[in-house]
Image 1: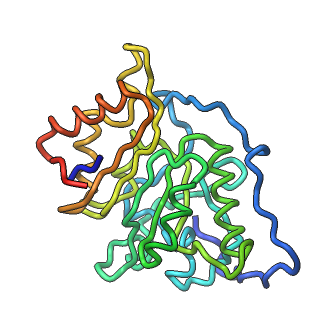
Image 2: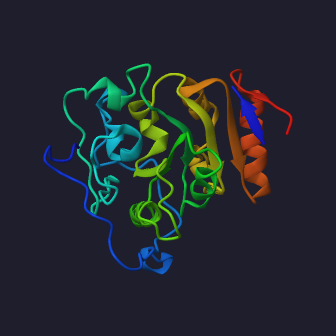
Length: 248
């Protein structure tokens, strides 16, 4: 269904390609419980505004800053990120009209399958996965790094990245008004209990936030194998004044 609506050190250099076979991460090494409470206190860092996000550390090939593809800054304990107190350069934050900006957003990206599939189909679009679970984020980040280093042939997936964050709380801290062209919500947690419905990733209130960061004519996709959740998301989108159903 579709509806419309910390910087690396200055002297760092890229390492030479690793000789021999490049190993991809294994899911079995990154297992984590499927459910997570998005309403709990969030202690990890997040940017004060989109002006404080340096996207060049996530998409170095697009910005030409000399940051190596092996560098991961995922906002996890293994691969931390530090957002500056002062705004970063307009060319890397997206404040400049000519700057590269994230256009596709996969909220709750899981193990990154959709992002990996879309990368080659839209090579000029920057895509970001947002995942709240720490180990799952580490897996996706390492998977992307392996592909960038040529794990399955020529280096690829340079237009894809991932960040650990709580999308229900911090989307406007990362994205500007009218920036995102496509948003994906694939198989989110259904939160069956009535008292937990407020934890669902699609609701009337959250759709207003999504509409703020989405460009005119942008598309929101949702998918689930839970009938009750599908009807809930469908109803929320149909009833929201800033979204309308479009034909397949």
